Length: 203
Image: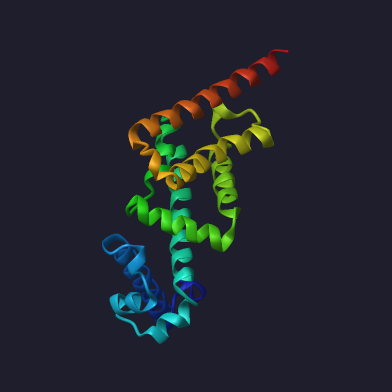
């Protein structure tokens, strides 16, 4: 391994400490809930001193934002993988990835997503937007140009609707039917975009 890419022992220990803090936070969120999450509880669970924890994170919110960033990046990578490996899979696998995340309960994912949005603002949704466009640009059946407005509608619709569903638990929306409706929405829109593009070519 080239010297410039080799992680030295200090770097490895630092990464291990960060990983332990994030894993401890995830465990507490899953087993005890957000209300029980404190930096003292996290440091205890991670097996590090509170002083060590604060060397890496300024507060609980910073820890949650870092976890949210990891989750968002993992989902972007998963969507790209789906688009490459399942080109005929339609919108459902992508929507399932957005709905289900890669790990953790719905409650945990909401906490992490909210923390990331507080830390980075709506840039988070823009990142999903750019990742989707990057993943579909080589798809032959979608080789026409979306246009900025159509691309915006495509990439923001599901994320924003899922955020709205999470913010309105009193609606008691069921995951299966909601998934079906989102698939219908996106696939119908994609079909309409294709027809419109074909008409433009014909004219």
